[in-house]
Amino acid sequence: MFEKKTFCSGAAFVPIEGGLEEDDGWIIAFVHNEDTNISEVHIIDAKKFSGEVVTKITMPRRVPYGFHGAFMQISFQAQEHNSVYHQQTP
Image 1 (cartoon, rainbow, N blue to C red):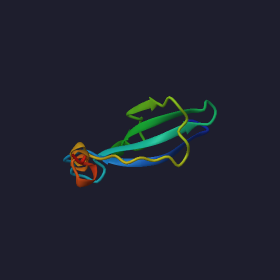
Image 2: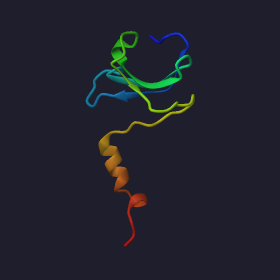
Image 3: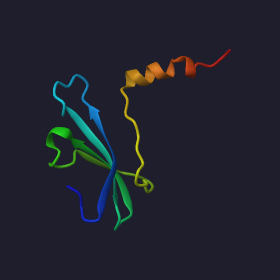
């Protein structure tokens, strides 16, 4: 799946909304090529894990090993935005 001297870190599973099976979704991973010094985000169909990558997004800068993120549904983000912790005082 990965080219020579290419390494992956920070993989996360993002489920398909309404998915019925445990692999209904995507794997999103940060990938770095040591030869070219290019970092990318790879989106992989979890049902076809050993197949072709769905898409690759080239990052404008090097993403360090160990970097990770969280992926939340928009509805969850809206709830967090409206929570007591994010409300401004008058």
